[in-house]
Length: 375
Ligand SMILES: [Zn+2]
Ligand SMILES: [Zn+2]
Image 1 (cartoon, rainbow, N blue to C red):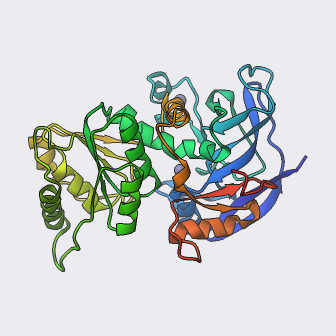
Image 2 (cartoon, protein in one colour):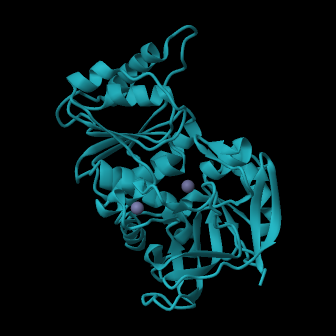
Image 3 (cartoon, helix red, strand yellow):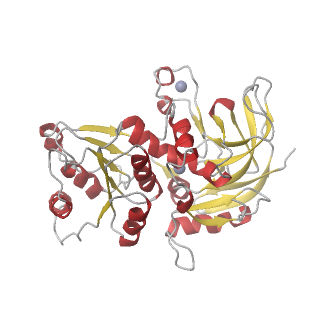
């Protein structure tokens, strides 16, 4: 049976729709009819560059990994799901038996089968097969679009809750107001942060962040000609401390800084800004190498963590926060496309706005024969 219309990346800037076979199930697998898929920066990156670091697209690959859908069939060993269930799909199937998996950090599993990461196909098809243990029932009060948004929300949960271990009444600054940055702010708010500072170089994005989850915003100054990145970042963070009355210690300090931009100067500013003994988490993916003020890490005894995808408990917490109304995902879905309009959806995400000039936060592609207006 080849009734599995899919959106396939064949090479750089080369995509086609293709009928593919419906995947065969193993005993503990679930076959999901995909209804909604969010477009991620990484999907666009594969389309434009054909690679991310060492992950190289060298054979055709179905794109997409932020998806929700309806269970169409389950393997004989699956007990917690049945055909017809509305689900969101954690797109990484881990081995369960390696050192990383057994130590509770399955995001570091060397054998992970992750959707739309070469050589594995993604979720932008009519059907997608995944193990039942990474398929979660959607609570009735969440929409299919909410279900697709569980993927970036889980990225934020992993960074802010699991890794930074943000506690009630702590303060946080998030650099970068894209989808993941905004969701980091939303998670911080849900966990009871007393101050959430958004930083971005685009005023409109800052305004959005302040309406959404941030308590304060900061627009860094322009860099002077010939100013080194470190000199600039030091100056910009001093200005920021002044403008927002941020101190190095005490109740006016920033406990946790999250970089969701990947920009060198954001990373540097965050390290200058964070309190003595504070926490820095890198979740944005940008330039592979940056200059880091290493002495600062030493004298401030900073804790520095890298955050990659999500691990045990992150999806369940993301679903709970959304279902309890602590995180509102609806304002983030700015653009909706039919399956056949996938190319347009990718272009909109790539250029940051649609033809009408509307800025994009998250573009969602509906599954084949699903109406985009049906959220
Ligand atoms: Zn993603
Ligand atoms: Zn493993």
